[in-house]
Length: 432
Ligand code: HEM
Image (cartoon, rainbow, N blue to C red; front, side, top):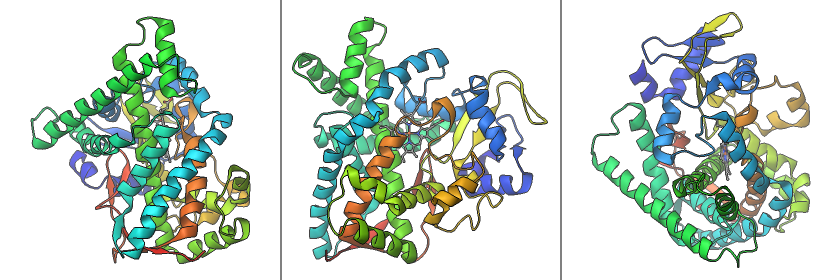
């Protein structure tokens, strides 16, 4: 079962959900409980979350790559302090300040793409979107310019994603060429961040903008040795990885969904013509761009970047009539529940209207959770949605995409739900 789970995990989880109902348990010493009932999901992630913590095998793997930080911290009290420290960076008033950088970076990408379109060159949307998101993140949440290190971090993310798979199957200690490359990339990004931190400390009296690095340095200075340098480096690395990989993967899938669903693409174009008429959107335009937001939400339904959320039970508990022993792995899959025929009509079909006000009102709660649920919900969800709402209209007004593959792209579910082999497209510049 474990091997099968590893080979085609999304299909296997869907099989379990469809054949064994709202809760299923796989056999064997590493057996896990899969939840497909929104009440159980709410209970584990939101109601009794203190009993379900991030010490399961998957989080051990993520910790091996990213260290201890806001995402991986299993201890509630210290996690809460971290969350309160960092949450203000994602408040609404910061977002409007970030808009100019998001627009600038997306326009730079479009300028480069117009040249590639004229040369009829194909592009792989995965690295393209990662680079864009990396450049935006480093200029907003990090207020700095370390664009030159994009490829170092993207290498680290790529290698880290598959290293976690090895960590899960307990053979990460083998000195394979991949493991050696991963460890080198980890050391390299560690050093880049350490240098950046040192530079920032030296300039701290000149720095006027508040960003993640200044908040962390400030907190370190006020708590003395409580926050170690290692902790700061791991926290920064985690934000680079989560802020780049998740939104980047989602946007790559989004262009795939639009290229393969011409009706939805037409509806998007109609909204953009009506609301923007070719101009670059600003923050005031966003509330008019309702279909644009629905396209993003629907992409996250079909291709949730974090397709698996896992926890480990501390004490024995009950989910409905089912007993859950202590020290068991609980698995909740946004991918499975968001495509479950019991909760969604035509669940595998791309239909942004699933997110119309009317349909949202009628939806069963907790059957859509691309950003998680409860206190450990994504800290970057509003930021990611804001980025997408600006990036989508800028790109969609300037380009048509033609998918190179002649069959549906397969899934490569690692920690994030990646497309196997990337998403290769031909670009065509649109006449505005
Ligand atoms: C489409 C984009 C994104 C998706 C789908 C996504 C998804 C998620 C999910 C499902 C979780 C909860 C994990 C769990 O409960 O085990 C999470 C947590 C987290 N995300 Fe995101 N995320 C996205 C964007 C971002 C961005 C842009 C950032 C940062 C700039 C970010 C930073 C984090 C962090 C730090 C946590 C841990 C929060 C905590 O435990 O307090 N994410 N994300």
